[in-house]
Image (cartoon, rainbow, N blue to C red):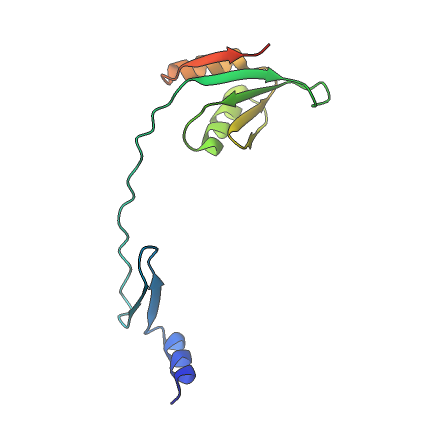
Amino acid sequence: MDSDTFTAKVRKTGAFRMMKNKNSATVYSTDPNWHLQEEPKEKKNVRQGTVYLRRESKGRGGKTVTVISGLVGDLKQWKKELQKLCGSGGTVKSNFVEIQGDHRKRIADFLREKGIKSKFAGG
């Protein structure tokens, strides 16, 4: 039996598992119940700094958006929470969260409740 036939039979029966660990070479096992044990990821203790809220309307056809910069963590989750709070749409662009409309006051109050310092920037 050549190696290609053996590999095909092993893959078909599922008696052979191959897993790759990010920090080491490929790991082989013939035990069907074997799983690679991942090391727990350490969470970085990132401190939230000052968040800046600014209103923009240039280049948007006269539409106003609130741009939030300086948020730490998952920006998509922040966007979701802020959209729900303001009842409007929004997006994540690079390191900013944009919420449609002028909601600076409402967002500042929300961040203050969470213990995050915020400042109004621009006009």
